[in-house]
Image: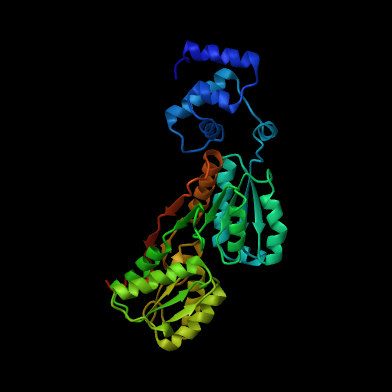
Length: 357
């Protein structure tokens, strides 16, 4: 980039001679907003290259610099994001979804120069202890909150505090709430429709909890696909799971008596448990019962046979949630926004597609 215009250089001299530069000053000199300067300073990936170069040249020419303590004092921000998960410590570490989600969130925080605080809530008592800490003005710049039946009342309390917040997953009440999600209904429809097109007649489902929006939405997609494929809804083929391997095993044992020829599992973890129950019953996968899961977590490929599943990029999901939250912190949260991430059906041997060709 060439030399800055003389009038800009004169303004730089006036500012540096008379006062300490601020982000607003740098923004005016570069012809951009304060938030754009902040994004460039924090290495935010979504800044046009010509704008990034102009801001960097302005920063270099003015000698502007910052440090964590100074910017916290000047901006009255903590540069800390809170992640609230309605989970016990045990379930957090045993469900591979959550460590992968946190990896994406942590990497985004590292790249964008934010500190990460993790809060696990498994009871009303936890909520009462943690709420003052995460809602106290100045303690956090924003909050990421995993939607769950345990935490929805806390979501409403936090929404009333005007704290910048992004919900991970669809909350039960999404009026004026910012959230990031996948289309669980159509993703589940895609998975079950695949089984229908392969010719399966008695397609069962191990759903998620009916007290969660993800459980409700994935079951709705299952039912929608059956109706679209002229299949009957047989309640004996449907069991409500809890997104654990043990839950999948237990519910599959119940469904076996109804003689399914295929199963849609609302999570890979439940699918692994259900497949174990099928093998213990002396049945073959996919010859006797085919399987489709949901999530495409690392555990879906080592199982025998490898699991056909709906892929969602959990790591990218976490990373994108942080970027979304930082945009709200810097540019405001009105009106509310919803981001829907893409999914893809990954076909492996458990659905029997290769045997049917």
